Length: 435
Image (cartoon, rainbow, N blue to C red; front, side, top):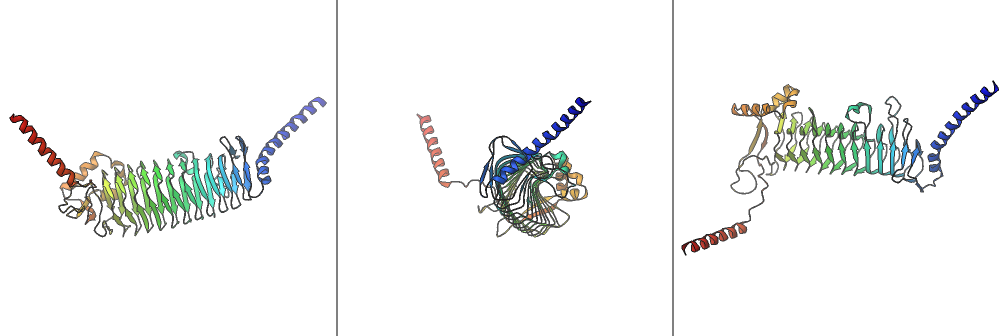
């Protein structure tokens, strides 16, 4: 009996001893952080450290290839509570995934200013990075991989920016999250040269003004970027491609104004640009190529200016849905390029006659959303041509100054030299023939 009691006691003790070891490991990284002096650098080994941790003073944590911090599936893996914290070269995973908790958790939660986050890879977390009332956070070379399109409702965003301003994100890769980057009630943020793929929206603004995004790639999302209830946004040199689905788009502008869409590429999307309930936006110098619909414009959107855009090989270049539209398709004697035969007898690069781009699809799309499913069908082409013959097309865009093709200008001197050489060749040939 005594022997059995002894064995039972040893088993119980070994259980508690194992728990203490695990607890020691949990404490270890936090202890290292506490022992690092303010402004100091904590260099981590190429091994896995146990989270969760909180950083409450300005320090730098640098890992190396193979350094990872693993959360326990609850809370935030890393919580930054102090200004001036830097995280560099870390793999982070294992935040809480519950949506019934008081907050949505993340791999890194930033609640202070002037943080620098670079070379981070975040997986298996609800949000990758969450900024809450933060200013001047710089994020570079961030990779966040979510759980895929089948679980969009149960996961968060790659980078979530909430009530934060003057933050910078560049050279990062967001994949399979709900939204790649989500910006809410946040102004003056800069998002450049990132890739968002396999998300709901690659980039999503809500109630956020004076933001900018440039040179990003939005590939194979439900929607490339969505600007909603947000004003004064500048986007330039982005690429929106392969965003396909029954209601997909490259760029959505909804209930927003003063958006400047400059020199972007919209290729192979179901809809390149979709405008709804918006006003006074400027669409300039963009390339719309092989989309099902280049621009879809609902008449709840007005006072837009479209100039210097190129429409090429779209199923429908422009579609105005819901009745007459009040927008300008030219400005100061310059319109758009439509890839349609035009005369330019005075060689000024502008078509001699105004261009009326017309289509009969607007009513079909307005009355039945299923029409989107058949835009690539030959039946739609036949439908368009039949209505064209019956003159039932409606004008979608009136361009008084359509741009001619950007053919290289003819070099008159070269042409002259060519003619002279050809003439000399003919003369020499005939002289030889007469001998």
